[in-house]
Image 1 (tube, rainbow, N blue to C red):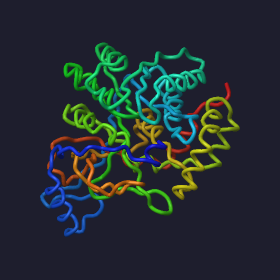
Image 2: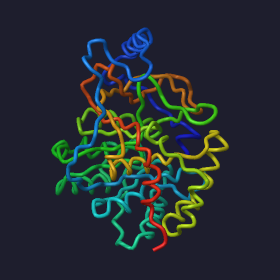
Image 3: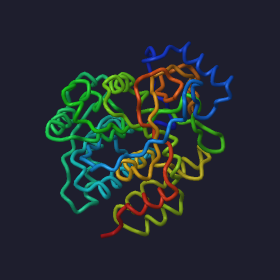
Length: 357
C-alpha cells in the first residue's frame, strides 16, 4: 500500500451518486448542530442500528483478485500477507486467483510474486489470470474477467478484491445474469461521513487509493446491487504488526519467515514516516473477515459517493469523490461496513500463518 501512503493517484470528479455536495454539507451541518460526531442518527429513527453479524451459513468458494508487490522496494507487502493467510485458512474454498494493476503496474512481475507465494505451500498452485492493466480496461474483457465469469457460471463466489476494482467491476457490469451468483464483494476502503481515522503521531489520513484509481468501477459496483463489504482503515488499524511480531515470524520459518523478511522495510517506513508503532496489514484484515467473520464486527449502513475535501497524507485538500457510509445518507444502497475486530484478532491472524513444514 506504498502508493496509498506516498502518493495519491489523480482522480476526476464525478457527480455524487445519490446526494449532491450541497445536500451532504447540509447533513453535516445538521449533525454538528445535534452534537452527532460519532455514529449519527436521524431524529425520526426509532432505535440505533444494530451491529451486523455474519449468519451461521455454510461458507462458499472465494476468488482472490490482488495486486501483489511484496519484496519490491518500498511497496506494501500486505497482499503477500493476505495471500498466505487466505491459502492457509480458506483451503479448498480458494478457487481462483487474478492480478491487476495497483501497487505495481507490471502484471508479469505480479505473476512472479504470486508464483513465489504459491511455492510456499505444498498444494498444487492455482492458475493466475491477468486482469486489468489500467482503469480504461473497465470496458475491456481480460483473461481474469473471463475466468471469473466462467467460475460464476458454475458456482456462487465471494470476490475478495484487494486491489483496484476494475476487473471485478467489469465482471459485474458485463454479466448482469451472474450477479445473483456473487455472494459478496469484499473491498479495501470506505469511510464514515462523520469521521475518518488517522494514523501516527501526526494523525495522518491514508487515501483510499483502490477507489480513487477507478471511481467508475466503484460506481458500477454500487449501482449493480451486489452485496458489498467494505474493509476500511478502521478495521485495518485494529491489528498493528510490530518488530517483535516480525521477529517471531522469522523464527518460525517457512511462509512466516518469507513475510517477515519482506516486511521490515515497510515497518520502518510506517514508524519513521507516519510515526506509528507498527504497520497494519490492510489486505490481510480483508481475508481475515472472510475466513473468520465471527471475529469481525460490521454494520449495514447506507452508502454513497460524495465529494469531500481530500485531507489524506499528501492530499490536495480539494473536493474528490469518496465512498462514504452514514445513517444520515438518504440512500437505499446498503453496504456492510466492517470497523472492528475481536481482541484476539491479531494473535489469531498471526497463528494462522504457517511456518517451516
